[in-house]
Length: 125
Image 1 (tube, rainbow, N blue to C red):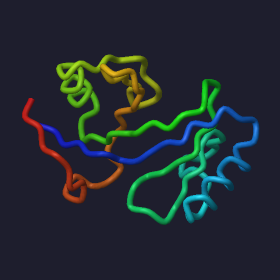
Image 2: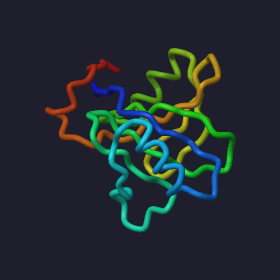
Image 3: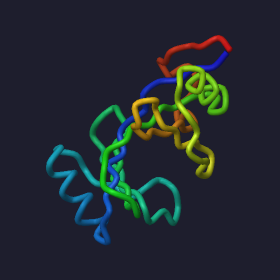
């Protein structure tokens, strides 16, 4: 048994100016721009002031927005989503990039909160 829920949205920006991109999105959404919580992280800026995780990410592909699903068991959640028709694209650190049957990319990431605080769906495996 594991839990999962919508974690947040990542604004993928094909840019050399991550600070400028983050400043735009922060102002557009009325959120504070913060450096990533991971030491030395140069590809992300967090937008603070909302219960969802919203980040601006520097990418080398076309700009788009993708969502993250957080789970107490990433591999179990990936298997569950594969049964629904999603497919694995590739692993990055401790998360998995997926593609929905309709073509949208999304990530399954480890839950960042205590399990009791997750307020998520519970899935039997």
